Length: 363
Image 1 (cartoon, rainbow, N blue to C red):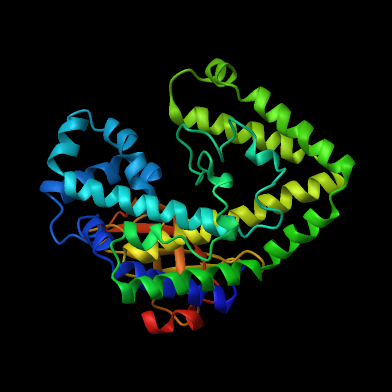
Image 2: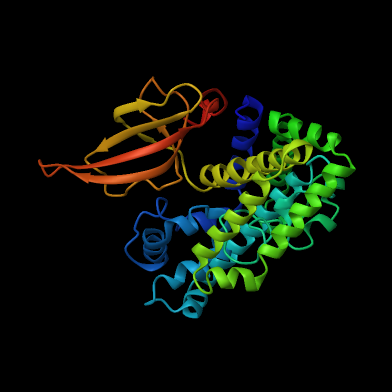
C-alpha cells in the first residue's frame, strides 16, 4: 500500500499535528529533538530510550508505556517522575488520547464495522489485551461509540488544543487519510472477504475466536509466563497466529484480510505517522548500499564515523543517494568496530515507496 494520496494525506496530517501546542510540548524534550540530553527530562528520556527502545519506539503511545519504561531504570522513582514532569506527562497523555481516537475512527471505516467477526478481536488477544503489547489495541467499548457515523471526532483537536484554523486542517487531513485507506487494495480485499462470508464461514470464525479466548485466559498466560511482559506478549502473538493460520477457505481469507487491513493502521497510521509527526525527517549518507531484489523493498547500508547521536530504530530518514529516492524507515542497527578504530553503524531499512513524490515539499 504505497499510494500517492495516502502518503500525501499522512504528511499533511503530520504537519497539522505539529502546529498544535500539545504536540510541541510533548516532542520538544524527546531524544533527537532536545538540544541537550544529559540533564533534566531530555536526559531521563534518553536513558529510557537507550534501555527500552523497543517498548517506546512508537512515540504517540509513550504515555501508557511509561510505567514499564521507567521500570528498567530502578534509580528512577515513578511517582517522583510524574510529579517533577507533570506538564510533559499531561501533554503525553493528551497526545496518546488524540492518536488512539483518530486510529479508532479510521478503523471504524472497516467494511462491516462494528460487527467484525475476526479471531484477532477475541478477549485476551494482542489487539484487545490490557497488558503490554506492541499492537495498537481496540480500546474497551471502542466499537460501541458509533464512530462509523461520525464525520470526525472533535475530541481530537480539543485534546491537542488546536485553534480553529489548525483544527480545520487537522480534520480535513484525517478525512483524506481515511479516504485513501478505503481505496487501498487491503481495504478492498477486506470488503470482498466480508461480502463472501456465509453461515459456515462465520461459524468457523466464531470457533477460532472461542479457541483464542480459551487459550489466552489469564490463567493460561500465567501458566506460560507468570511475570515478564515480553514473553507474555510473544505467547499471545503465537496463539493468535496459530489459530488464524489454521483457518482455510472463506474464513481464512477473511481473517487474513482483516489482519492486513488492520496492519495498515498499525504500520502507517500509527508507527510511521508517529515518527514524521514527532521528528523531522533527517538525511543519512549511506556506504556499502545494498538494495534487496524487487518484491522486497528494503535496503542495507552502513554509516561511517558514527555521529554523536545514533539514528533511532524506527526513525524515518532520507538517504543521500539517487539510488533510493524514497524515504526509508530503519528497522535494525548494529555497531561494528574496525581494526582502524573506526566505528561503523550497519543498518537495515524498509523503503517507503512513493514518498519521494508525495513528500517532496518536506525535503
